[in-house]
Length: 505
Length: 125
Image 1 (cartoon, each protein chain N blue to C red):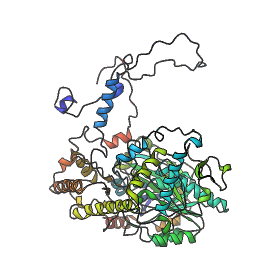
Image 2 (image 1 turned 60 degrees about the horizontal axis):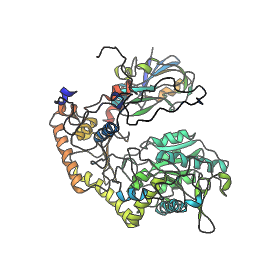
Image 3 (image 1 turned 120 degrees about the vertical axis):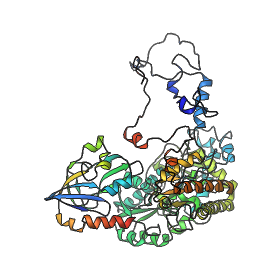
Image 4 (image 1 turned 30 degrees about the vertical axis):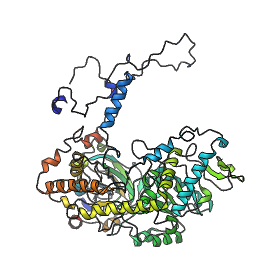
């Protein structure tokens, strides 16, 4: 490694070559020094540890240095442009973080008596109020722990509503371009998934959708704007047809950030939608989030929402409905311990209140503007999969690289050398060699221009026939191109200590 | 004598009497890229034409493989578990997915022959 990097140490300037933590230190070297415990009786019932478990032994400064060095190899939104389509890697305002750490908010325990956490309950209620107002739907289940968890919650609510009316149904319609979590959630909830094709405009083929409707269809799951970055223009017609068939309309709210403050999903006939707080409401995403996926519900579904729920007491205080038996409605049960990702509710509410209704409206407008700016400026460089205008993300296909010998993956790897996180590639599956770019509203024109300049030069280089340049990319990253095929076929999932005495390879 | 038919979803089915072998076409493996995992149906499972019968996963994507005809799964290609690359190297041969006993051979009349499938692939470009 050191030879390849051209230095004796293996480090290259600020870019440190860092071994695994298990390859460092030794078991007798540790950051803490505790006295041996006095003699004591073993109360482990014979289940005590029989041999060392092989924890790495390092001093505190070595541990700090290890993780700091690893973090420097990690691309993050705080470090650079991260236009990952359908993921919305946008800035996390520091105000959110400040408020989430306030005493009385950052140090609560979920088992505290409700009388001691009235402010926190008021905060959950206020966050719920904003989500209901922005979506035009009367109820919200706050507890789902992520977008896909919200999907499952929504489908379980739909199942409960259907079974309550004695009309359990078997099938869920999902467009071909859907996020993979949609069919997965439907299957997990016991439904059969029936795919709906897209039309030439990249939108749901309404005629094909209507043909698939029937009295065994529980719901349709539609993303709007869809994963091609396009608004589903026929959504009112779709909603009417779905309701006529006695089914529910589930909307994947992953792309709500494109329409927030402008379109209320409730006005579109949607019965149920999860909201990824990290996408639309700027809570952290990546690096562990954690995610949060509250689900807004129509009046028809509201009675079946899971517990817990925060409700107003008669005296203006708040209380929590913890068990279905405490509820006047028919909650289907509980899907998460405690109350959901409270820390994310704090951040999302901080964002909503600091932006205000007008600010949220501007954010969705700017997100769409930025994506269309990229689409317009890259005209002639990358080929859009569908004609514009687009919504908050722009989808290109591989046509502009045709006959160059350079693929979408190669172009993505070359972008790493340019200091940008690549866009989403090969998704959605309905577009050949897809490149899905979501710039988000928080990027400046200067950043977008730099990204455009890099893409222009790279595509020109591809067209000039310099295939080798792309095959070798990335050159400047801490690691070169990984063998993705071998990683999948022969994965090495854990480190194992070298066998003593074995000859080094 | 065996005849081979093709679906719009890029499966092939080679028919020999009332049994048939199913795989994915060369075009399909080319589009998928390096195949890293194949999920095969259980032997004895009844499938209807168009049902999801298997899953093929490549470095790019996971895709369903649909049953080109109705019938009972009688054998699966165990070799794919250790060597999914067979789907890339020999899509029409050793990279087959499963064998089935046909319930209704007349269903095959809807499928394409080699010439019609070639036209279908050309139209996608």
